[in-house]
Length: 311
Picture (cartoon, one colour):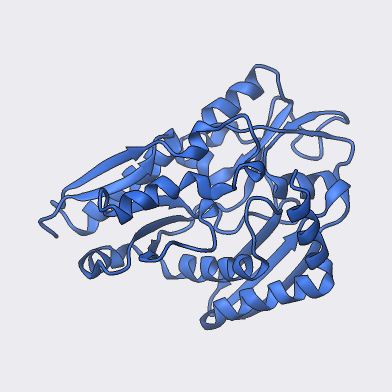
């Protein structure tokens, strides 16, 4: 236990606050009596809700202010959904901990029954994720996909009011908020391959804060870190951000890591896919190898198109 009060920077959304409180509880479970305080911060990503993220700078808008709080030493650690963390981190900051992953899959929440296959032709589906849109449109060109942002409650409200027939969210977020009963179907990765880092909560802090790193070390879940390492290596090699639809999903089975990834295409065309496996000790190398295979199979052209003409 440290005598210092650990200050946790977090977004103000209900899900972000849940995640920060969860980290606080995890810290206290391994260090009884440790004082912890949340530092809620409203980020640019939370303020601008009427524009797709691809047009305003990507998911990094959800964490810039949290990272600045770390650099200014207003906070000691920041809690993130790893799917929101860009490949590049500011100098002086690093990802100290990956908590054990929750369900990484996407979830369909619909007003009808029958799940994904049962959605009627012409149904209006809400999601602002290019990754989800590209994959789902390629399978169901008969559906209409429309822009949807906001926190989980806002999105569910638009579904319930009839604006959409169904929406697609991260299963982990619904589970964490106690809303698992709203899920109509947890989409198999063969239907919607998850985002890089989806389902994992990461803790970012100053790289030189050795005492904090030592205090947080017991929270790190090695298989989840190995999974995220491979996925983020893939994303870094592809130069991925919110402006391009990249999916990457790794599984650790014993000493073997399996990684599947894709880059989405425009207009409902099939995504470019690749996969590989190897020892978990080579997680970063596997991520780079899968990225190279994608590029060789045509993903380089798709990435240029998305960068030149963001949705």
